[in-house]
Image 1 (cartoon, rainbow, N blue to C red):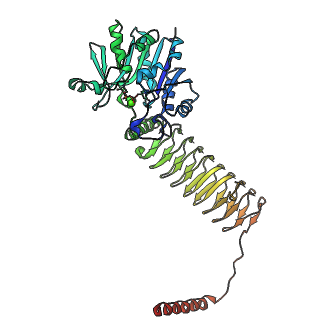
Image 2: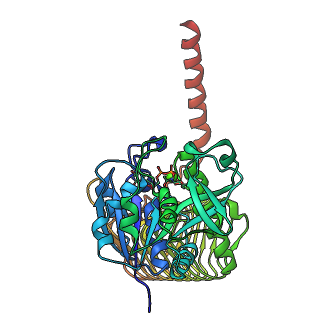
Image 3: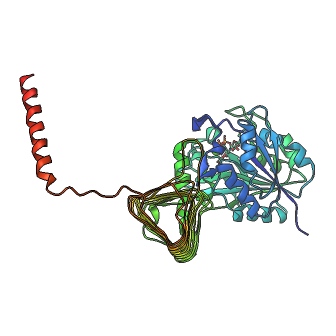
Length: 456
Ligand code: UD1
Ligand code: CA
């Protein structure tokens, strides 16, 4: 029979060391609040019931944790009296009676399903408390795991540890699986007689042993248990997250020339045989299909790049950009809320916003869709196989019919029918022999100015 599980996420801390106007669990990792990463790890470990313990920024934290992947109910920890006190804020949820109670921290966003599942398996084998630990070269600040003959004797918080205990490099990751049957009784016995005067969840280990129960530790990779207490640790966690995701994508068939310079969002989808050149930044909600190339120094957000399309170098795709198969958006172009049809080219120095560009059209250098009148946004519709001459302004709302040709430098304010040629500019005037006369006049004016300056 499958064992039931309640996960309790602790996210009520003051985040003092973060020095921030908002709770640390709201700070983004890969463009999404850290707490949402924890929730998704629980979902991928097939844990459906989650109790979220909130304090500071309670409402915002609850919202950020509601990713839709699991049921989250929030519990308010009114005072910050320590991690055991925080777990007991979710007493009502624990009382429902689960086989396993899994405590995780909101500030440990790199955790994955594997150690959570491993801890639950060890619980199923008859252990009462299973702590997820890690080995680290720098254990400062972490609780130390005191292990003997495979049994976990105690967890000693850094501040309470002796010199000898501080030399231990096996640390408490802060994540713990507890027998659901015993959880409330054990938690109720925790006191606050320690250096910080807090109720430490970690005391559970000695308590369960004193009652004849069994506690053990399971080891997980250090990376997954990296906690975020400061901005420096936040940056470090971001780096680890990026490394992990780039690696996964490369193993899945994405090429990156200089992976360490490519920045991904939590939901970036890059298909097999996508090539990403150096210095590319992906914001949220991006999907790139097979064979597409993202050239160097491009910034891509909220965009769909279809098979074989190319972007950049130095292109910016903003939300709603939808690039058709084999289309091209080249250097110094910006595309926002616009469909670029199959094989269409927007190659140089162009802004396409609130627009539809038909398949096979060629948008010349410096073309601008003038989509904003200062109050409202308007749409530009460009048909298939059109040619828009360089440096044209398309003043929306306006449409250009399929096959039409717009002369370069045009200001298009009225619809252009299919297959028409539109000259949206004044005709050129030629004045033969006039240049030397003008030049002479300009020289005279310059000399006159010089004279005035000298006499002043
Ligand atoms: C905790 C562990 C330590 C472990 C480390 C791993 C305890 C006593 N110590 O220390 O052994 O090595 O994590 O990262 O458990 N929180 C509340 N309410 C409170 C206090 C904390 O909700 O009253 C939440 C925080 O928001 C945070 C988590 O609990 O998400 C951990 O608290 P934190 O103060 O960061 O604990 P550490 O000192 O890092
Ligand atoms: Ca912490």
